[in-house]
Length: 496
Image 1 (cartoon, helix red, strand yellow):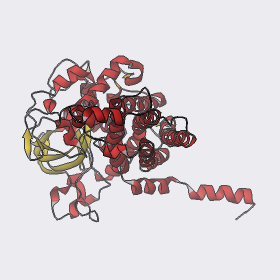
Image 2 (spheres, one colour):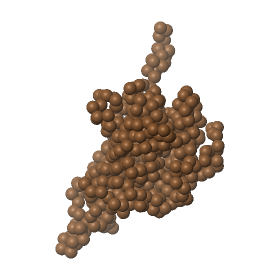
Image 3 (cartoon, one colour):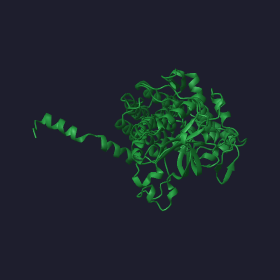
C-alpha cells in the first residue's frame, strides 16, 4: 500500500495525551455535559448510571485487550510506524482485514455482548476509497480531511462511532420526498467555512460511549437528495446533540440489588436515538457534501465491511455454547447423546457464520485508494447466516437449560431467611454443584436469549447492517447466474 505521510493533527481536536487503558477510557467520558435522556429523565453523568455503565465496560475491554494482546488488537500504520488500536486502523493488507475478524470474535468471547466499536472501524475503511474517488473526479479535498481526522483519532486513541440509519418515515419515498424533511439527516445551511446539519440517527450502537460520531447517508440518493448527501464528523459532546437511550428487555434489573439476576452484570450493549439540532460542522470535518452519485458506493462498501464484522456474534455464540454445556453438566446430563448432538449442532451453526465472514476477509482486494476491501458476496452470506443461526443457537440453549431458565426465583428469594435455604437445597443440580452456580448460568442464558444482551445477539443480528432482504438483494446482484449457466452449457455440450 502506497500511502502519503500522515498529516498533522488538526487544530479542531483539543490536545490531550492518548488513552492507554480501559480505566483511562472510562475517565475520558466524565464531565462532558451530554444531554442524555432515559425513561423520561435527564441523566446527569452516564458513566455512573448503573444501567449504562455495563455498556461502557464493554468498550473499555477493547482498550485492555489492546494491552493484553497487541498483535491481535492493535496494528502498525505503514506510513508512520505508529502502533494504533485496530478499531482505528485503515487496512493495509489482507492480514489486516482478517485480524479485524479475529479480534471481534475474541471480544465477543470476553464480553458476551456488543462492544460497540465495529461501526466506526468499518466506516473509516469504507470512506477511505470513496473520498479518494470523489477527489479524483471532482478535485475536492475530502480524502486529505479524512486522513487528518483518522490520524488525530489514532494519536489520541479515541472511540469513533458511526451513524448511518435514519428514522426514514415513509419507506416508499426517498429523503427529499418525505412530508417531514428532517426524517433523514440533511444540510439546512451552507456557511463560509462549514455546513449546518439537522435530523436524527436511529439505533446508534454505543453512541454516548464514543468521543466522535461519523454521520453518513443510509441509502443511494437521487439528484434531488443533494442536501442529504452529507458525511461529516461531530464530537459527541456537541451541545446540538441529544441522546435518547433505548429500552432493552430486563434492563432495569441493573437497578436492583445483587448481580445474579442480571445474568451478565459486567457487560452490555447500548443503543440510542441521536437528535441533531442545527449542528455546525467546519469544512475540515466534512467528507462528502452533495455528491449524491457516491452515496450508493459508500453504503455498499460500508455494508460489505460491516456484514462480515458480524463474526463478533460467533464470539458471543461461543459463550452461549459454553453456558449450554455448563448447564447440561450441572443438570447431570452432559454425556446424554441428544445433549451432545445439540451442542454439536450449535457449534456447527456458529462456525458456519465464522467461516463465511473470515472467508470474506481473506478474499479482500486493494482499492484504488490503497486500503483493502473484503469480498461483498461472502460478507452478505455471512450476515444472512447471522439473521438466522443465532436464533437457533438460542433455541437450543433454552432447550438444554430447561424450563427453569424462565421460572427461576429471584436472587432476593435465595437470600431470604425463611425460604432461601429450601431454594438452595431443592434447586441445585447434580451432586457437587450449588444452586447459586446453577442460577448464575441459567441467568446468563436468559440474559443472552431473552434479556438485555439478546438485543445485540438476536434482534441486532436480524436488523443490524441491513435486514435479511437487504442481503438477499446484494446476493442476487452478485450471484453471476449467466456465468454459471455457461458452465452448465459447456459441460452439457450445448453450443448455443
